[in-house]
Length: 352
Image (cartoon, rainbow, N blue to C red; front, side):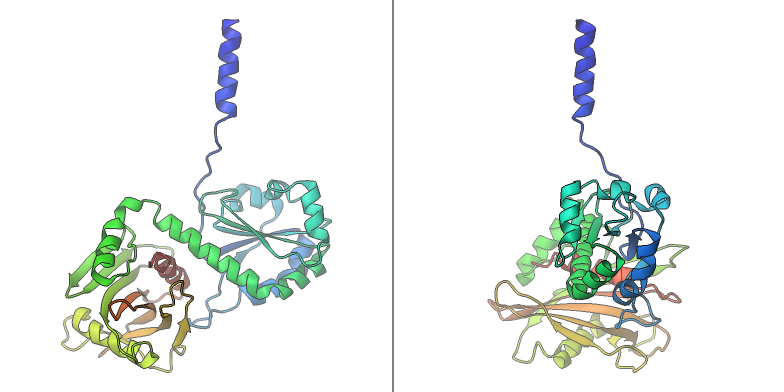
């Protein structure tokens, strides 16, 4: 009886133990499309046009996502834990997709397949931590293509938003490392932003903070990501593109010199060799003006040093000031800059 009790106790403990998920693999720009060969072939053009097309604000035709299409065996062995997975489910392939459909029962799969208006379904942390898994259900590959076309904007927006949110949670999984700066900015500017622990403070003073992360990577190339936080008093023109650029260059001229040559600094480029700047109005919960400016920087006085930046402007109506957060990327000789910009955008989600 005593041995039986021990055996039952062991079964109970291990049977109730929560499954530990591995960390998601790959980069934030990787996207695995998992389905059967026929559906892959017949939806390839639709998916590539939506998710594999070139990013308009970058050079060198860098795609929104690096798409991979493994077969069922490859998926189970190597691709199941990738950061982003999109599963295409039809009547004929639902049986061969295996564990990819573990979160659904046969009845729910049937309902979703036969629902002519069903939108994509997204789940988090199915096969790995910090992972996004999307599902599109259709009767056949033509139905899948139709649903992708009809939901193209919502599919793209939801996948992008969930990818950034997941990356944000991954960057700030160690909350103790960034709370000090967030609180400091909140006191000084009335708005805070969290800084990941692997960013080093390069300079601070007079309401200006510059952080930097230098990455050594033989495969992707060495790169630098810079973060800037500062504030200034606002006026009626503070939220025009012209004034945002003027204030950006004014602060950078003083605080981010480049090299030892006098007068060189990280300035906003107006060169036609780069995509045009874009200014976007962001949603606001309190009625304040929130803007995002995308553009390219270059070094005043140099021609071969440049990169993309994304700058966030938030109005603080209480003390009539502007809070500015920016990230910029320097990746000499390499085209793959989107993953670094996504990291900056994920950090910006912590602005509050």
